[in-house]
Image 1 (tube, rainbow, N blue to C red):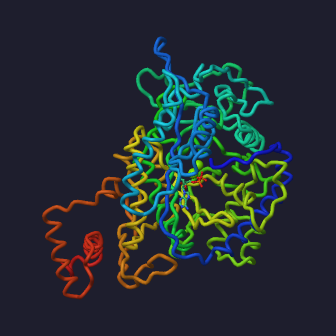
Image 2 (image 1 turned 30 degrees about the vertical axis):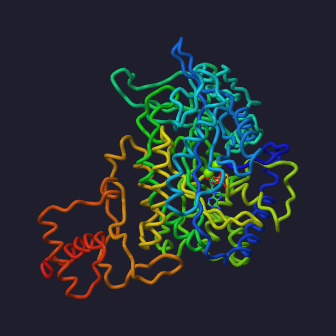
Image 3 (image 1 turned 45 degrees about the vertical axis):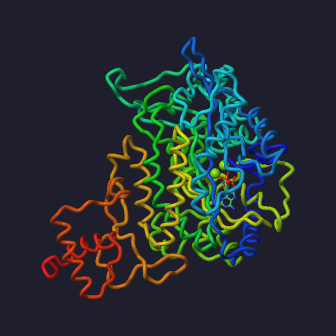
Length: 574
Ligand code: ADP
Ligand code: MG
Ligand code: MG
């Protein structure tokens, strides 16, 4: 979750009072940054991963595994032995939502050489070893996306009983507040999300039905004041706390682009890849001790921080809320940022009109202005009494307050004020894998993919509504093998004029009725193998294309051209 501000957090009513203040100054801070660094060029590739870890405790005698609530002490020790005693220490450690969680990153971002790629796994191994050396026998550090028994009776070490009282942070029937990180930011986030929403958060995950599961599957909850009975759905695993989502672990990659336009191009291109890599990394079938019918955490975490009021969710006519809002603040992106993305922006975008105006008048183009004005429909969730009045020219806390609590599949990150850091993009959909080998493979794959996209000027863009459909498919059980995803048929646009960092569709040759088709992940990643007759056909088409002086240097294009030409004029061509 990044670095933590220190101070006295305000409660929801007080925070709400300052919401417009935070938004207004957040935008001023963004404009100041933008105008200082909008023309920065030639920043080199730097990048880094973020891995979230769980601490676990084994009771071999009773065959029990519990989450170990020692994250704060471990972080303290890791920082003291690491970054605080040596600025070149190879690792950085940060607190995370769960008191049983910690987050580790490389000490310095990696660079763009092959040698850098080769150090990723070793750095991850070193991190694990560093933590391991601080643990006792029967304790371990683990990279699993969800702890299978999270929220079950006595799932923590030490044991705490949940106290579902109004004065608590989450009021959960299952997840004790002691399992939330002790830093006030986390309990305040939890409490303020619940207060803003007007009720406890509610997560319902479909249960996996085998012959031992009753039909319908309906649970009764002890200590329920009626809220759980209303919120739970039959045949679903019900969860009622932020910890069930934010208490899961993920794997993220941030990389620096050479300029703002390259960052906008990569943000868009990678947005289409999010559902694919999410399904490839799917690792979370278990919730609250049950086997679920999904294998991906995304929807769970999305619901776990859904602070929208009933009016914003469209459950009641709008009286007090300013907008109807279609998604949780943890969800997929809602608009592309590059010029080529514009025509695929087919999702209805709720924006704060005042802020959009403020941005346009401040010299921001339409696409970027609507992106920021969309993020800024949200309220700040935490605010510190000491941090209300900021130096807008040199600080960005109010901007970051809203930006960093829009937890989307991709994040477009402006440089921090007065820093050497360039424009960055964060890739956020991946689930964490069990081993360092796998985690390093996933992050290296994503970074290499950005290099391929840039070198070959690839174009993966499809309408954003189709990317959203893909994201739903990605979370279904075994989507990696069975799911069909919309993907662009012709991804190769090389040789076309590059505008705003991306190559635009070539006029004339676009004979396609539809630019995208449903494909399996196997086809998307490995390509399609041609049958003997298909490859004979493609050779014929190649010959024709060559005789017409149409470039045929890329196989992907050749094959999709074969299909396109076949589709359009089968009789004349073949
Ligand atoms: P978050 O807000 O997601 O917690 P951070 O800013 O803490 O993100 O950093 C996330 C990742 O960015 C880390 O892996 C870090 O190594 C990497 N990183 C740090 N500096 C840069 C940079 N200049 N360019 C790209 N990545 C960087
Ligand atoms: Mg982080
Ligand atoms: Mg991050």
